[in-house]
Amino acid sequence: METIIYELNAVWIYLAAMLVIFMQAGFALLEAGSTQMKNAGHVAGKQVLSFAIGAIVFWAFGYGITFGEGNGFFGTQGWFLKGFEGFATGLTSGDLPVELTYLFQYGFAAVSLAIAWGGFAERAKLSVYFVFGTLFMIVIYPAIGHWVWGGGWLGELGMLDFAGSTVVHLTGAIAALIATLLLGPRLGKYNKNGKPNAIPGHNQVYTVLGTLILWLGWFGFNPGSTLQTGAAQFTYVALTTNLAAAAGAIFALLAAKLHSGKADIPATLNGVLAALVAITAPSAFVEPWAAVVIGGAAGFITYFTAVYFERKKVDDPVCAFSVHGIAGIWGTISIGLFGVAELTGGSAGLFYGGGLKLLGIQTLGVVAAGLYVAVITFVILGIMKVTMGIRVSEEYEVAGLDISEHGSYGYPELLKKSEEKKNLHLSAESSSV
Image (tube, rainbow, N blue to C red; front, side, top):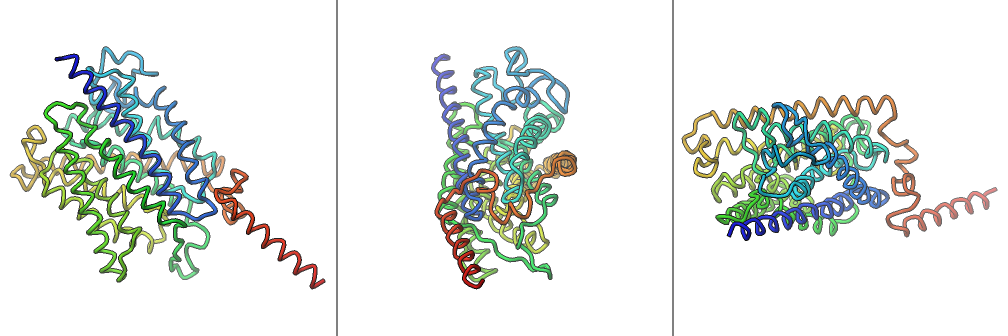
C-alpha cells in the first residue's frame, strides 16, 4: 500500500507540474494577443527564452535558496539539487524525489517570471531578459519562496499562502510594476495633456485562448499544491479554484459594463485571471461560498485599478500589476477574513471568530514581500539602466521588436506591406522630382 500511495503521489505531482508548465503557452498567447502585431513574435518568443534561462538558474541556485536549510531569510545549501535527502523542508516533501519537486516548483518560479515580463512588454531590450531573468531566479523569487514555504520567518510566524498569491503572483507583479515605471510609457500611449490613448492588442482570439489555457493550468497550480492524492483534498481545491474564476469573469464584465457601457472582452479575461490569482492563496483554506466572494471581488476591483493606473500614466501593457499584484494582495489577505480553522490547521479568520491575529500576519507578509521585491528590483534595474540600458531606441520601438531585435516579423505579411508602402513612397518622391 505504501508503494502504491508513493507512486500515485509522484504521478499526480508530475501531472500537476506539466499543467503548470503548460501555462507558459497561455502566457505566450495572452501577452502576444494583448500587444501590437509588430511585437507579437518577440513577446511570444521571449517566453521560451526566459523559460530556458530560468530552468538552469533555478536548478543551480534558486531551488536551494528557496528550500535548502539556512536561516530565516535564505537557504544556504542545496546547490544543483545536492543534499536534499538530509534536509528536505517546506514543500520539498521527503517522500518525493527532489528532481520531481524541482520540476514542480520550477513551474511556479517560471510563472512568476512570466508575470514580471508583462511590465517590460514592447519596449525592453532582449538583453534585459538574460540579465534580469537570471537575477530574478537567484535573489528575488527564491527569497520570498523561502520566507513563506522554505522554513523562513514568515512561515514560522504562521503566514498562509497555499499556492502562491504572494510568493508567485505578487512577487512577479511588483517586479513588473517597477520595470514599467523605470521604462516609461510606450511611444504614443499618452498625449501632451496626459490623456491616455488606447493601444489595443492585435488579436483577441489569442487572449481568449491564452486565458482558457491558464485557467486549465491552474488546476495543476492550486490542486497540485496538495502534493498528494490522499483524502482527495485536491478535488476540494479544484472546486474553490473554479468557482472563484467563474465569479471573477462575471463581476469583471459587470464592472466594465457599469463603467464604459460595454461588455469588454479583455476586461472579462482579466477578471478570470485576477480571480484565479486571488484564490491561489486561500483555495485550501476557505469554504466554497467564500471562494465566490473572493473571486468576484478580485474581478471587480481589478477592472477599476487597471483604469486608475492607466490614468496615472502607468503604462502596464497587460495589466500585470492589477491582475497579479492587486489580486494577489487581496487573495492573501482574504485568508485573514475567511480562513476556516479546520482547513487552515488551527488559525481562523476574522469572520470565523479568529480575531485580527491571522489578518495581521497575512498583511505583514504582503507588505514585507512587496517591499523586498520592489527595492531589489529597483536596484537591479536601476543599475542596468545606467550601465547597459534597458529600453530599445525610439527607432527600434517604432519599427517593432520583431524586426529590430530578431530580424523577422511574427507576421511576414506585415513586412511585405511595409516594403510596399516604402516603395510607393519612393516612387512618389521620384515622380515629383
